[in-house]
Length: 445
Ligand code: ADP
Ligand code: MG
Image 1 (cartoon, protein in one colour):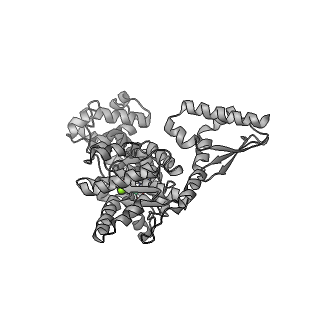
Image 2 (spheres, protein in one colour):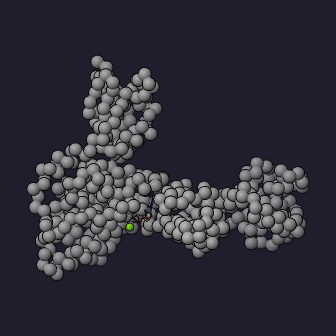
């Protein structure tokens, strides 16, 4: 009776979530979970991997506790068991007799650092990461092909290899080929030369998973495109997984209409430039992997000034790490500016006005703009006013007389005096330095 209730509760929970979530999320995360056993103590749920279990608990603990009675220890009556891709494994056993090419040694070449665990998630890449995990969990069964596109250095190759690692770890029998488009073309050329093209065709068509990086290199090469299209169709028709990356979306690529349409069959997902917070998390993660730590405010500074490309961000961390190791120094703002100098991108100064500065400083120091423009000499007002004057001289290219007059008619010598005072104080006052960096950031974004 009780066990039946638990099973019913599970299916009600799943239906509830299904009605609330996108189909992508449902297919990736909930559909693969199955009840392996049901007893009075609880339900044993089979999950394809630890991600699914964590996802469920992290995102739905509240809903779960609404559907399931907690046991005496205050815990959910749910137990998880990793239930490794059994479905795929069975299918795979049946196709084991497929002729294996002895001459073409099969060897997956994947960068060991490119795993899902090391891929930092944020709003710009959440969807594509989730799709990639979905594909990796059930190759050939969700989106086929998965087409990932986005600018340089944003993690396309990283995700492609992550899919490869994940599938390889979960099912060693699956035959995976991860290849750049250029390598595919070179391979073709070699086999054409040595008249062994049929062998190559057989090899590619016997794969379970084909991961192709940078398909844009197929543009303007119709013969190779034709060969690739045939391989592509043969695999898709057999339900084998294909993942493609590109710097442009399928419709923007100069490829045949047929191939373009085929590439749009599955899921086309874009990977964007990570936002500031994600970049900060990437900086810290990469530094940690290199064995050093970066204080928060400095990670923030780096992420703020290297913003268009994760590869550059990583290059900066490597350089900083090497320098710190060599000199045995801790990471400080000065060190960052010294070692990264020309890598830091300073956004062209926006039209910053004294009014903007006053507003920004007023909110940072919790005072009113009118007070800053007034004549009060109390410390609570005079200090932020000096900070605002410092920022005005730093950020606005205008005469001191004019700038000073915008502060409720102050003189240029007052402004200069404030600038000198704050500049000096910043040398020893970490808090002030941080406040100024933050105000600048607010103004420049
Ligand atoms: P692309 O193929 O899009 O040009 P890559 O996959 O080669 O970019 O990524 C460039 C570098 O940036 C790699 O070292 C990769 O590990 C790193 N990278 C990109 N995005 C992320 C991310 N979200 N989390 C962690 N590292 C990332
Ligand atoms: Mg790449």
